[in-house]
Image (cartoon, rainbow, N blue to C red; front, top):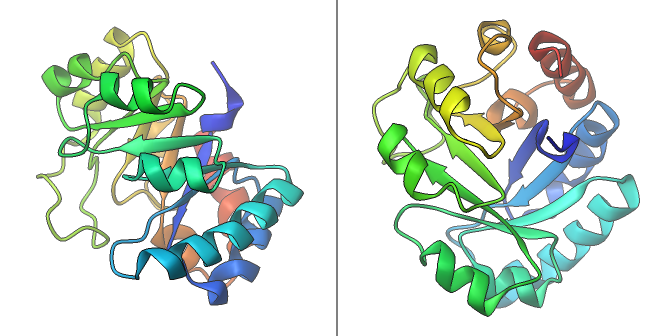
Length: 200
């Protein structure tokens, strides 16, 4: 099970968050995922190149959310696809060199995407970061998915310092967060605290 998945940070195409990203990687973030829904492609690409270089210099992996085309253009390490994005087999065909993460929200959807390199599951807890998020699952369904799915399982949704310890025995490979680190006054300490709380 790769330590690459241990602590993922999702960030927008916004240069003002670069210092937070660097600090978070120092604190233990292992993978940074570019997640941009609103900016024009050209701007996202330009900022994405700078973010990729920063992330690689700092020793973390770089993924792009939802967009295999942008992941290829940015020479990313991988792409994360949601349930309404291109099917896994299509992404594998057009981007055979990319690692692939895929979203799920229950055991059935996790089974459907277990051909991915890792399976994200959630939201585990209530989250303000996604307007159309599914109902929070809680920890027991996450534990069942982690026990059955052969791929590394990454928990998403509402995870922070206050509840990370609840996931210690869930059998997961890691977590993905946004606000727990980007909204923290000290992103490095927040990342280190999450790793410690999770025992990862």
